[in-house]
View 1 (cartoon, rainbow, N blue to C red):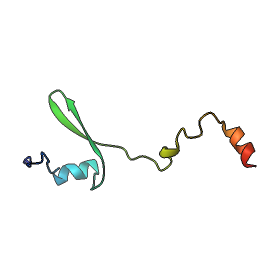
View 2 (view 1 turned 120 degrees about the vertical axis):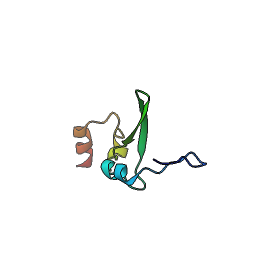
View 3 (view 1 turned 30 degrees about the vertical axis):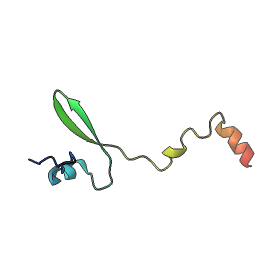
View 4 (view 1 turned 45 degrees about the vertical axis):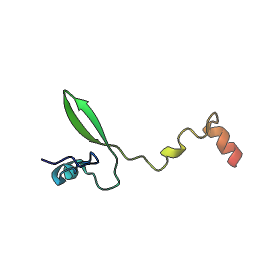
Length: 68
């Protein structure tokens, strides 16, 4: 059992942090399922995800021709 702080924060017990594999700095999400709150670990983004879709209308073959 844990207690809600004045800032509406709670500490996730170690057994649950370990089971989820979460550590300081990781993002978590909450969902409601059948009147219960479920804690989910958000998947980490891959390093190249930030570049996804940046090339827009260009095709790989066109980009390769430009680079050569």
